[in-house]
Figure (cartoon, rainbow, N blue to C red):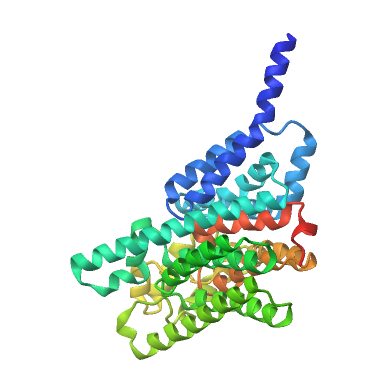
Length: 402
């Protein structure tokens, strides 16, 4: 074989990780803005990453990093074999594609260092800030046209980006968490501190308009950590600014909570009685070990609603609104064990490494799982899968240990 051909082939292979990184970062930035474009970019990055695999050891490394992802895909496929609604089951597989793709993409990108992790966070914050600004401008324009204040809240507020408000609220929480992390653990120039504070104001201001009580509790957990760290650590001008920002945001959460109680007519919220849905999903499951299958949860749950005088729930086809109970319904105790492994593994790794950033980013998923099926939408799956793998597969524990 000609030497020139081998050299050209080698040069192409060397450029593949850079190409994957570029597509991945673009995908991360676009995710909060456009689900459709993000999904296409993710698929493109996955296809390119296949060409970056040249040895059996590459697959071993991917398996080592993402074995719990592959376990989830396996359990979904097992559930596919005994489901009747194959159309819904296929949609579930399609939604969970990120669990297969992201381990390959991150390994193929060769992004191992703190600067790589930060680059992904920067892209994500850019996307979240852009989406937040778009929502705000769209709501203001709608208000001047309709004089309807409800355009500033919940579903109507995020309508322009076609997102679920609670999912988007968790995007904002993650962006706020990383900015505060920079304030406390990085040496930022004064100009950047000011710029980051402007972004914080935008993110927090629009966050309060999403109407999510569970999300507010998650953000309160993050803010409490930083406030406690400020009280215990050495003081500096940068940390004082950050602590003031944290205190103001905590006060803002309490004020919003008070206004929701005193003037419930000003907004629409995501909190309501979910215990009926939880109980229904548990009692509707005929098989405690294997569940009803990947695609039959809608039919089974709606049948239970109709037979127990809850036709309104069946009409809107409500899911369990609890990730753990939903998993029990679809996959039984086996599926619930798989979900527990999936959620606890990155948290365990972060705690073991004393990685504050990983713990604060990943812990809210547990709170979110209590009130929502966050792995039921592409927005939730790619969000969790990406940050799960960031804190599992990247070799940066010494750099980010705090």
